[in-house]
Image (cartoon, rainbow, N blue to C red):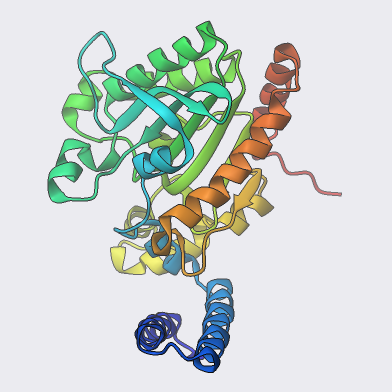
Length: 317
């Protein structure tokens, strides 16, 4: 395999294309057996490649334009989704999508940041960057979950909260801070999943929960690599170096105990197989929620508080 992972990825994509073409042309059983062997070889090579990805390459995968977004997972994982709009104070922020749904036999509430795929969708969803009314809408829906005792699933995928003057004027920091406080004491099980970019307080405003999952190629960081590089090295060209220093990949976050579980993705990344990625995530969500539902709410809140207090606590012998 080439030493350059990017070149290796391109080579694997070319091999996949050739295999698909051969599969369409050949109906001989021996040839089909040989094709299956080649497919297994390509799968093994892709697994090896995934193990050698640098933090900066994982950043690129987390931002991949074909990566499944929140509404893609809603389609594959949940049923009977009914969206709830507006914060009942200012407006309806499309950067966050909230609603009631059914997860297996459970009635639940789901909240997720949505980026949008086409140019029109990106503008409509403000590239997944929430304004204060977005956090207040999410909080209103969380309170509905608490009222009806429905478990809550949140999905993080944003480069950060919207930094515009209008957002600051309407209380951006206060809206995020209020969500942090209220989620810490919300009397229902909360499962948080980082599905793409978990950017700064913009993600954390929906990120307080009992169990935090992160997909294999997602990232979670206090600042973007480009912004970090601009501050520390005075140049965004050092973003790759910043990505390594920030420890923003799933394995790094697990070692720092900032997340609780890494959810694997299909070979090549979630962008290669939306349905496969959703199935892997659904299994993890089901297992996690089944465990949380057995814990009495007072004990759950105590555990949640203790979990938050332990973040960034380091002890040396």
